[in-house]
Length: 382
Image (tube, rainbow, N blue to C red; front, top):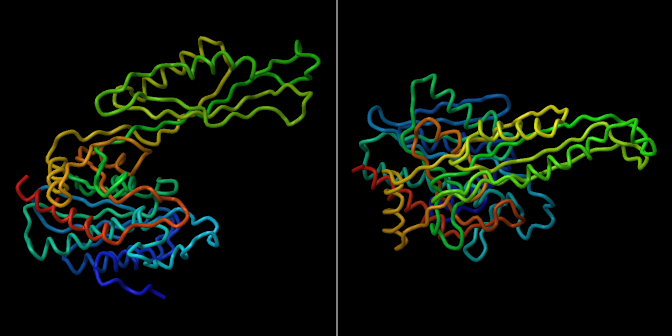
């Protein structure tokens, strides 16, 4: 049963979306709902399914640069539902706060995008640019059959996004006090150091990979990759997992598994990371295998038309200029920026995302929709 609808169109749509239990990679009917609303506005709908992931590409207009709203309908698991003050998919409103999984991350933003477009197109039926929505149900999961696949599909269609606004929850203390102009890259190394298993009482007959790797690991974690720059902090490496041994206290292990992750900025490249790590392994004479997994390269959108439009829009609606940030983890913007698009992220408060009783004030959703509409208005003269 759908929740009791709020009088405001943005909040009501957010309620409808939140009430659908779209735990990643499920969409649970969110995208058909969005397609219906967008089709009524003249958007051409493309339902793109890759693997077990549903994606929506909706586009309106024939000429001009392309502005794209990007987001995801999938949400993280709820955890213990009995610990929630309000059921995670009931989309209940109490004291003007909408509760539920996905309210902030990021169904509230998607609702605000749709209603912003509805009002903008009612006022400007033939804008000087095209409009699009890129919606996936694979952002909170593996992120292998979602936005990245849609971007590949767009290339085959000869389509290119010029401006992209991702609705990730970017606000820190108050609505629109921060927005993202970029993100750090993320790369994981899965390293196996090989030795020779044996009895701890006869170490001369074995080769302990933990002992061999210790000097290497100490040097690896002490590397200064760069000093950062105006927009990014220094790149950092963290060891995430280490595993060795059989569980017995009298056995020297034969292998050591080390998993490490680097969050890196635009001062450091993927190739330079790989070169430094492999050079260090060679220096220590280790017998190893190493598998790299690149989640995404860093991206940065500096002073450009979209950045200026966002800052002017927030200034007009909120009365202050948002702070530009590159902090946090990764987002699907990492798949869109390499195509040459200007990418920014602007959304609600991130204080309760992925938490029990995730929530967003209804007034924030209404204001966010107004900001999105104003951004579109600002781009009419870009």
